Amino acid sequence: MGQASDEKINADNEQLSLKDLILKIGKWWQYLLSKWVTILIAGIIGGAIGLTYAYLKKPIYKAELSFALDDDKSSSGGFGSALGLASQFGIDLGGGNGGGAFSGDNLLALMKSRSMTEKALLSTITLNGKQETLVEYYISFNKIRKTWQPSQKLKNIVFLPNADRSKFSLQQDSILGAFYHAISKSHLTVDKADKKLTIISVKVSSENELFAKYFTEILVKTVSNFYVETKTKKSVQNVNILQRQTDSVRRELNAAINGVASSSDLNPNPNPALQILRAPAMRRQVDVQANQAILTQLVANLEISKVSLRKETPLIQIIDRPILPLEKEALGKVQGLIIGGFLGSLLLIIFISARKFFKILLS
Image 1 (cartoon, rainbow, N blue to C red):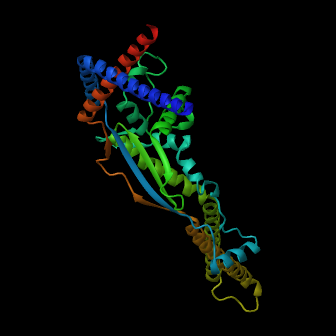
Image 2 (image 1 turned 180 degrees about the vertical axis):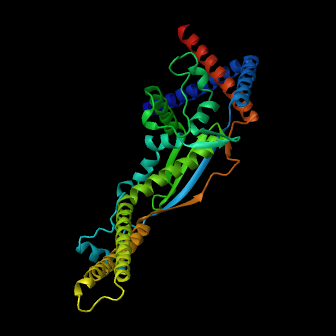
């Protein structure tokens, strides 16, 4: 009997607590309704602020370029055998994996490196018939030069086309470093479209549409040239050495042939009894035969080396490039009005509810 009474009392307490909660919510709602004019004014002010922000906020343009990297690192079949045979005789025709440090995910880090970003910014572009560096255009549309006017060290700094990077001042280095950090942190994204694929996507966002487009294209071109040059550097050196040797031997062969002809012209009808008269022509003939043999071998090695260079040269194929007009991200005026009004009303409701709650606690 006692247990049944306790359960009834607990049920009554729960009903009273729920009833009190409903009553408090009702009172709170009535209190908010009494403040509807204030809340409406806050919503109007918030909407006005949101509308102003949407009007003043510049749209963000997004440029995206994707490319695939085809990097054939291996040699196979008869060509691989030819390279192996040549190496046995001490002839280095390339075929290595030079530039492998920039393969795979390392290429993504290379895209976001300071040196590549600076090279892209210092590249020359043509706007309205005038040549200027991309970094000068960046300074111009961001109106950065106005902030430099009070400083004697900064107001005369310019980045001219084709300037010698090694002769830049400390201030120029610092400015490029600041631009690099700003761009890499907030504007540049480099990633693979799919972890299993070799397609790399480069995205640049900016308030200036032309800068987003130019910087994306120039950055990819700069990195591509650097990557190909590094990848094929050793093979290019081998081709150049073999080409110089081939040209030198060919000149010697031509000189030897001319020497044989000259000796024959000097003694058109040599006396058979005087063999010494035939010695100069015979020596020249030996030079001709020796140079012919050497030239044949060098030409063969040169052609193999050229094939090796073509095989090692990676193919960077552009898939999609940024095309004007670019994708634009902007806050619409209606969106700004609605969001601003909602946030203004919500913040005021929270404020007056908190103030009412503290008054109850302190009373």
